[in-house]
Amino acid sequence: MANHKSALKRNRQNVKRNERNKVGRTHIKNAIKDALAEVSAENKDGAQSALKMASRAISKAASKGAIHKRAASRKIAGIARKAHQASASA
Image (cartoon, rainbow, N blue to C red; front, side, top):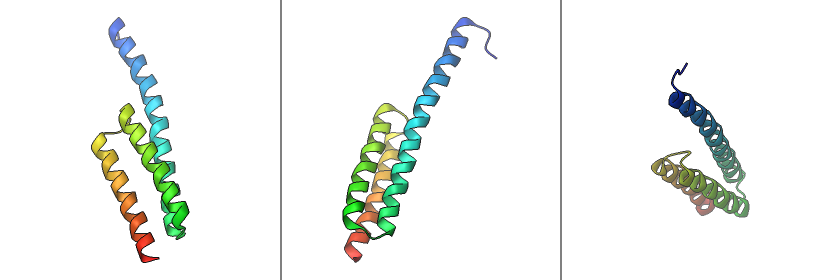
């Protein structure tokens, strides 16, 4: 446990930021799960809209600092690749 006043404040800030970032990461996971479900169901329109929503959630979390911008780019590229492959094969 922290003993100094500044360390106690830093601990409070870290707890608050961790909770805020956890919400953003959860939104990302749910958006990706929804997008992949639409892709596996071979629903073209649903997959495109889910892809748009997922990329928006990922970009927003990256801009807020919940995840790294390169990790966000990898996630967006991965789900976009799967969505485009599914729409091209159908």
